[in-house]
Amino acid sequence: MGEAIVITSGKGGVGKTTTSANVGTALALQGKRVCLVDTDIGLRNLDVVMGLENRIIYDLVDVVEGRCKIHQAVVKDKRFEDLLYLLPAAQTSDKTAVTPEQMKKLVDELKQDYDYIVIDCPAGIEQGYKNAVAGANKAIVVTTPEVSAVRDADRIIGLLEKEENVEAPKLIINRIRSHMMKNGDMLDVDEITAHLSIDLIGIVADDDEVIKASNHGEPIALNPNSKASVSYRNIARRILGEAVPLQPLEEENKGVFSKLKKFFGVK
Amino acid sequence: MKKNQNVTIKGTKDGLTLHLDDSCSYGELKKELDRKLSENSRSVEDRLLSVRVQVGNRYLTEEQEEEVKELIRQKKNLIVESISSNVITKEEAEKQKEENEIVSVAKVIRSGQVLETPGDLLLIGDVNPGGTVMAGGNIFVMGALKGIAHAGCHGNNEAVVVASLMKPAQLRISNCINRAPDNDQEEEKREMECAYIDENDQITIDRLQVLMHLRPNITRLQGGS
Image 1: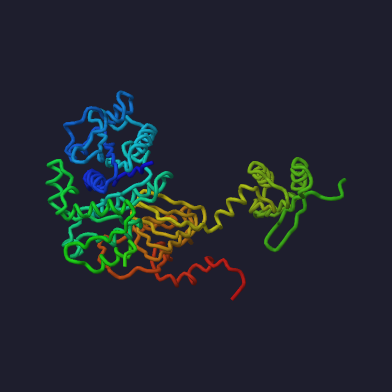
Image 2: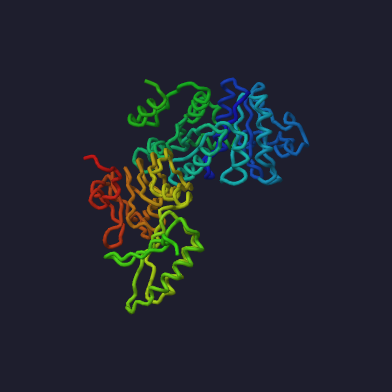
C-alpha cells in the first residue's frame, strides 16, 4: 500500500508544481514507484514541467468519469524504467468536474500500484484544494521566505490539521536567497519554522537552473550538479525516513545549520 | 382563614422585602399578593417605595416574573427592585459555570482560525497573525500573541489579556479596540505583559505584575496565604 503526499501552499507561485515534479523525480531516483497526480484542473502544468505534455491521451477527468482506465491515462516517464508516471489534469474542464469523494477513490486505487503518489495541489483553499487533499495521507507545505507566503502557509496548515486522514504536515522553504537572509532582508529559516511550528523537511535555494530546467521539461532533480537538485534528493531521502542533515546555505551559517542538524537528530 | 400566610412583608433598613411562600400554587400566591397589597396601599406616603421580592425555592419563569412585577407595580407607590430565588434552571447553572470556568487549549491558532470560549481562556500555544482568540472573560496566552485577542467580548470591562510575548495585531477588551503601532521599530522585548482598560477607557499594556493590584478578582484561590 503506497503513500499519498499532497504538495500544497495556499499561495500561488511559491513552487508547488516544481516541488511536486522534483520530489517525485527524486523519489523515483531512489528506486520507488511514483505516480504524480496533477489536480490543478483547468490550469495544468505539471506535465509541462515534466516534459510529458505531448504524450497525454486521457486525463484525470476522463478517469473519474469512466471514459478510460487509470493505466490508460497515466503517462510513463521514459527517463525511468517503469518507475515514474504522471496522471495529468484536464485542461478543458474546471475544478468542479471532480468531487473530493471521487479523488479519494482514485488515489486509493493508485495506492495499490505505486509506492508514492505525489499530488500537486492548485493554489487557493477552495474546491481544487479540497480535491487534492481528499485522498492524501501526508502533506508537505511549500512556502517562500516572504511574509505573504508564510501567512498563507499558516492558513493552509490550520486547514490540514483539521483533516483527520492527513498526518501532521511537513514544511519546505523554497527559493531561499542566502545573502538576503544573512542581511536580515528576508525571514530566516529558524524564524519561519518557529512561527509555523511544524517540522521542516527541506530548504531549497533560489537557483536559476531550476527555471531553466523546468522550461526544458527536465526536472532539476535529474541534474546531480545543481544545488537545488541535491536539496530535492535530500527531501526524498527524508521522506523515506533517512536522517539527512540540511546542506548549509551558500556560506556556512553556523546558527541555522547547527540548529537544523539538531532538528533532525544528527550530532 | 389559613394559618400560614403565603405573603409576608418585612421592613428592613434597606426597605421592604416581600417574602413569597414557595409551597403554595402560583395562582394562589398571585391572588394573595394582590389582596395583601391592596390592604397595604392604604399607607398614605407619597414617595416611591422599592421592594425586594424573595421567592424562596420557587422557580419563576420570565413571564411569571413579569406578572409579579406588574402586580406589585400596580400598587401606586411600590416598585420592584429585584426578584431573587434560591433556584435556577440547569441551563442557567451551566452557563454560569461556563462563564466562570477557565478553559485550557493546547493549540496554535493559525491564520483564519477563531477560538472562542465563554469564560476565561488559557491558550498553551501561539496566536499567529490572522488568527483570533475571543473570550467572555480573560485571555491568557502562554505563547506569542501575534493575532487578534478579544477579552470580555460580551461587554466585560474588567477583562484582561495576558501574553508571554505581546505582539498583537489588535487588542480588544469589551468595546475598546487598540491596534499595534504602524512604526514597528521598537525592538524592546515585549515579554510577560498584560493589557487592561485603564481609568481613561483606553487599553493599556503593562508589566504582568501590576495585575494583582488592578484586578484582584483574578485570584480565585480562597484562603491560604
